[in-house]
Length: 304
Length: 304
Image (cartoon, rainbow over all chains, first blue to last red; front, side, top):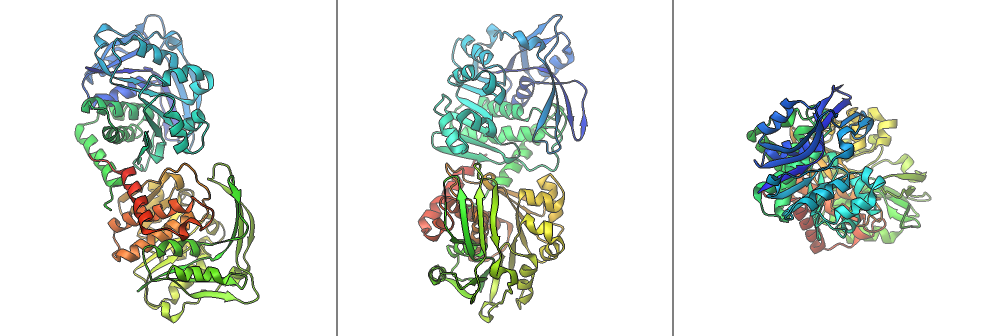
């Protein structure tokens, strides 16, 4: 039994109103697998990097018990690179540079030792690549969670819809839910998206928390109000990784477990934004995570 | 012991993507006192109308056990009139017409029978008028809740700050909290505003719920995700009225009671937006309210 995470492992260069970084390690699979590793010790990644990717970083994955057998290292090629600048409100950003490099021809090879995968996290990537991973697994995982973004709705809608059909949980933000459904009301948007394949839909609303939709049930999770958001990069991936990591830990797929998984994912994401890149989520203790989860409990608890 | 509500009683003409109304009865004190009346039977209003205001509407207040002795009817004058048009997203609107009429010279006279006021709701009005009401009460109420808006921050900031000093709870929306504090982070904004006088701050975030700040504690209440928002007019006033009505009912001012008051206020507001104007909140049953409150419980409950 294992949790397979597919997505980018990459370099980012980030500018926020608080400062800027040189090239640092980022990518959806990086954030998601690190977050998941706090809940589950059989996390395995499928991704591709160039030979510019530091061995020490691969070692750091392994220190988090993350299996990197499926991390392809392409000799003579460069890793995916993204650079962006956040606006003052931190809610919007401009992409400055996107260099696909190794990602342009990414063939997601699944090592034989990964075929025990029961939980699959499809990090944001070209939908066709996400779909290939599902097709290459001998047994369908117990839970497939898919993250995506508006870019694929613009340039690969048909592929995206084909892939969405195959998954159990879709995670997108509110603007993306509106775009995908053509509905302004999130309730109507959710009901439409739940007819497209997934049984569960998570709508991420950033500083306003997240909504989980399933059949006619809705769960609203708050976001932790933070005095400072230092760098939002990777918060969505960290959320998704914490979410599926917790689900793999508890093992049983149902609405109640997903509610808790959203709280654990939100807790991890609230750490992520406190420092640049993956810095904060590389060195968390279980005590810190438990204390942060308790903050979510106090924040939203009332007795009527 | 009573709950005094001060604010506008007025005519509105509303256009939304779903339709438009002729002149219908609105105003902050109308929404707030109707909402409060579901929790507390000693609601009294101080407001002013012209003799164009229908007797039948005053009778309807009385049918809700709302005392209208403090509702001044100015012979030969016209009631306050506001007309507005909502945009497609329902989150923004244009004011088409504002006719102050009787409101231009509103002197809030407090009948002697109102001096037993223990709970005071200052609906959105010129801050100087709100302050006059506080000064005219012989005994300071146990709880003073003040609603205001960005307009007064623009044109009467000093008066507004003087009035804010005198109240216990301030209710504003997120943009207004940012404007009043000069801080983008709502946590920083709240901490600054809590040094301006009020012990409690409620930040209303519309479809994203509300945040209650007190000392170092925060409570996040969700909004009920609705398939259709028919008319948002008066939702904030209804929220405030439900909030203070519930506080008057329980009688004891503390953080836990305020959390519940926010849920009851949010429940009333969720009804308000389902029809034009006050239509929906005029005829609610206690059963409907209890069922709606249970929806808020299911929406936000998790067990960790």
